[in-house]
Length: 366
Ligand SMILES: Nc1ncnc2c1ncn2[C@@H]1O[C@H](COP(=O)(O)OP(=O)(O)O)[C@@H](O)[C@H]1O
Ligand SMILES: O=C(O)[C@H]1O[C@H](OP(=O)(O)O)[C@H](O)[C@@H](O)[C@@H]1O
Ligand SMILES: [Mg+2]
Image 1 (tube, rainbow, N blue to C red):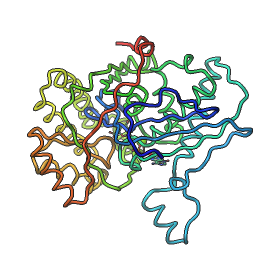
Image 2: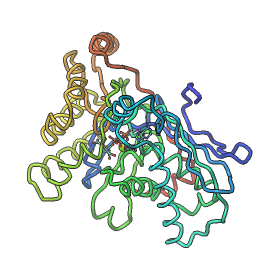
Image 3: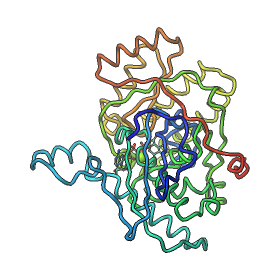
């Protein structure tokens, strides 16, 4: 796939009969994972990595397995077992199938007529696999964009509803996830999100407020090849929250409050406050999930940053960490050296500006 990052999705997705959409990874900057629990988050789409989905008209409906992400041919049993141990059983095919089902059902339920044409879907991604950078929803979101264009129904499916369709495709597969990834990936840019229960239940979506990306200070991204399944990471805390566990319920409220305070801190460019909020966010996650569920390598990525005096937290459920170095370039250099020694990859964060045009913006609530 094209290796040069472009800051926005292709404005004209049709090339002849083929449609292609590109969707970026996302970083949960504050408040995650309270999005799974009627909370609030601030998240942005990350230009460093992306997934693409291609749709070509065809006689039959075909979902094409990816040659490496959906591996079904191995050099031997040892290769097969190693692969399953490191990356699990699943690739992107199930995500593509699931969004097709969700899209079809949504259109049926909302009297949106679909033509009888068929298509072939294929995907590619350079988002490090299962590292809490929303590789899963990037694939689903890009596929939904292809379907909206192929069937020419984009104007009939409201922007605010799309994150929910993308989430439904993963819920369908039993993956526990929240809306923040999908909102960042549908909207682009930096977004403050409020998932208050009453609003969600009344309107079927949260309140999503785009923010100016130039308000953000320089940030760093650390990650390691260390796939972890967000569904598995979340399952115990989710169960405890559903059971009304007081510690989990009150901690989640506190996590959500960090995003609220963070919105003010970012608007006022109060970066020392932002650093405190980021650190508190990870500390609360650690106390709720426990070190075993988070994994020692993931915790070490956070600690490496903290040892040089930087603020750090997970971008998602684990595998990648977003870092703010309040002391500037000299501290970034210290961090780079520490990451090299620890074997972690570090990159400066590049933020994708909002994808929304004026018509889309008019449909936003709040
Ligand atoms: N890079 C990838 N290539 C193919 N499928 C992927 C990839 N990343 C995630 N998936 C699919 O999405 C599911 C959920 O991934 P998840 O744990 O949410 O990772 P992420 O943090 O990248 O979103 C996986 O079990 C797999 O089916
Ligand atoms: O735990 C989190 O912060 C997020 O986990 C999932 O994202 P992923 O990139 O798959 O780790 C989930 O989908 C998000 O809603 C959570 O906030
Ligand atoms: Mg995911």
